[in-house]
Image (cartoon, rainbow, N blue to C red):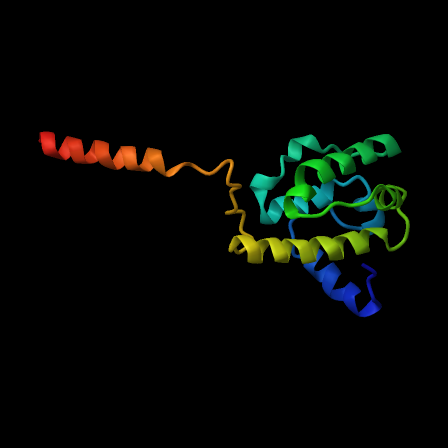
Length: 150
């Protein structure tokens, strides 16, 4: 998914609107370790990302660890993954690599939002983590019983 010159400005604007833990000075270098990408996803869906799994990194091995974790724990749940070669390109700050991934991420986040019917405010809760209706029914029954006893 290549990024055209016309797509760069809106993409950078989208990224700039997201509050991140580090200032963005050089996008290739700043996003190389995967931490800020995890923060972007967490901005929209905080329950999908456990930010403590990602640490700022300078070494290629730690950057790749972050990207592998992001792929296996987060991006998979969004319905895609980043190939190893692309992760290596990003980690090595290859020009244009992070922009391609961010364009894809933006697209996948929009698709995820459409599918799950949420506005990207972090309200998404995976089915496995959603409370079952049974406890709510139990609470209602308990309230009814208390009212009947009074």
